[in-house]
Each structure stands twice: as structure tokens, then as C-alpha cells.
Image 1 (spheres, rainbow, N blue to C red):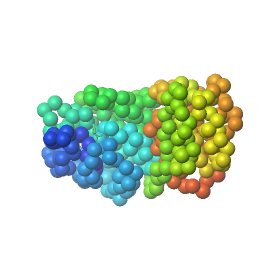
Image 2: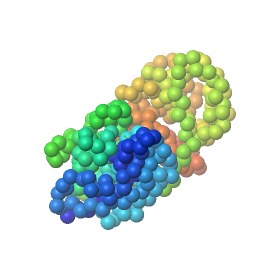
Image 3: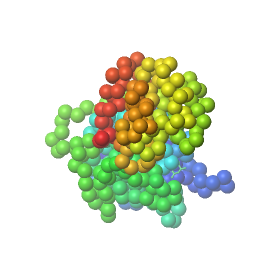
Image 4: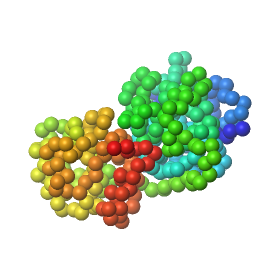
Length: 339
Ligand code: ASP
């Protein structure tokens, strides 16, 4: 018998129609009542953590999710977290850093249509998630959605209404689930338990630094806000164009700010607005004008969600040297970085 704990947080899956639009309104017991028949060898408990649209998800909610998994870790074989789709990829990335080396699966799922609607993806997503969480080979943090199993560090929401809401960026999907069968494609130890695995110990982290700012560049951007961003934040992610570079319009102001701080005091990470294939700062002069003068981090093939989450996780400790910080950033976790 497999014991699965479902943790509910709200989202469309648990929403009902209200005069003001869809709002989370279904209790966890009601949610369970909608579930189609699950195998007799799976025992399910359900616990409501909160009841929010994932647009309202904050760092405090992430910590509560981690705490709930930690508290119940020894009593269950797997976890399913029902979550709104809007920030599910962010939560999946955060959990991938805050719960490491888990030989038990921690699955996030949700739906594009509420479970009470006649046409809904909620039941199949939930059923697939439970099936995946109950499989002894599954491990670590993943999203199960529309028949795909996606690494928590690689997921991105790419469709706002159709059922196939998520895709896996720069890494193939780990598995597909079809008609109650799991078809595994990636047999990587980050995602699949070896039958004889014994030496794994889960590690839970309990703090995060939300002082990370994301600056998306637009052509002809004015530099005025940059000093203010440096004043307020510990980590700054610049989502640049193409292979990556700093435009002339903001270069001087940015360089002035960078010159005032040690690299570990204000951590700058560069990434790209291009969804696939990552940043390559060394390719062009516009990228080298930054790397040639300053110590910065490069997101390479990581997703934006993973870069922000990893920085939040690393910067929870503000006493680190630049070398230590770099080492932690570039050390791959749950296949978040391949390049
Ligand atoms: N706004 C909803 C949420 O993220 C969307 C969804 O769950 O699909 O909570």
C-alpha cells in the first residue's frame, strides 16, 4: 500500500464561478470527492494549506509548503501539491532548491478548468499526479500536467487557457503518462530512483531571500531606475536580448552602480528573453563589455523561474564569498543547468 499526501493551496483546480470571476472555493474534501477511482493499493490523505489564487503566492506560502512536506515526510511515500497554474513553475523551481535529494516524489499539479466543470483537465491531472507520486521509481520535484512530467527546474507556463499549459525548457520531459501508464524517457538519477538506492538523505532548507529583482530590458530603456534597484535589492536578474548583452542606453549607469559594490554584495545574474537555448554572453561585444569588466553570474540554459528561485535560495545566506556564491550558483541541481 502506498500512502500519498495531497496538499491543497487553491488555484483553478479548486475554483468556483463567482460574480467576480473564478475564485478558489472548493474544500479539500470536496476536491477528493471529485476524484475518479484510484487504485485500491493507494491510500490518500488530504490537507488544506491555503486557499488562494497562485497570483497571490508569496515566499511565506512557499515556506509553509516546504514545512508541510518536511513535517509529513516520514509518514508518506509521495506528495501531490495542488496549485494554481499561474505561478506553479515558480513554486516548482523554489521547491527544487528548498527540498533537495528527495527520493520521494513531490508532484505539483493543477488545472486550466475547475474540477467541478463538465469539461475539465483537473481530474486527469490529479489522477496522473497520484499515480506518478505512488510509483516507487519517481523521486524529486516535478510538475505533472496534461500527461507530461516536467522537472521542477525546467517548467514554464506557455499557454494561458488550453490544457497543455506547461512545457519543459532546454530539457526533455522526464516521462509521459497515458491511460494510467507511466512511460519514462529520462532515466536520470535526479528523477528516477535506482531500485537499490540507500544512501540518499533529503535536505530541507527553511529560508529564502526575496530581495531579488528582475529587470526585463526593452530597446531604448532609460537607466533612471537602475540606482534605485541597486539600492533596494541584493540580487538583480537582467533579462537581456538574444545571446545576452548590455545596451548602450543603460551601460554607464549600470557600470557606475556595479563599481560601487563587491560582486557578492549586489549579485547580478544575466539571462535572456529568448525561451530556448540559453544565454551566451561571450558571443558578442555587447555581452563582453559586461563580463570583461565585472564579476557577474550567467543563467546560461536555466529557466528564468529557476534563476530567480536559485538566487533567492542562495542569497538567504548573505555572508558568502564571491567564490562560494559562484560555486553554489553553477553547481547543477535537479538538472537546472546543463551548459
Ligand atoms: N489564476 C489561477 C491560479 O494560478 C490559474 C490556474 O490555476 O490555472 O491560481
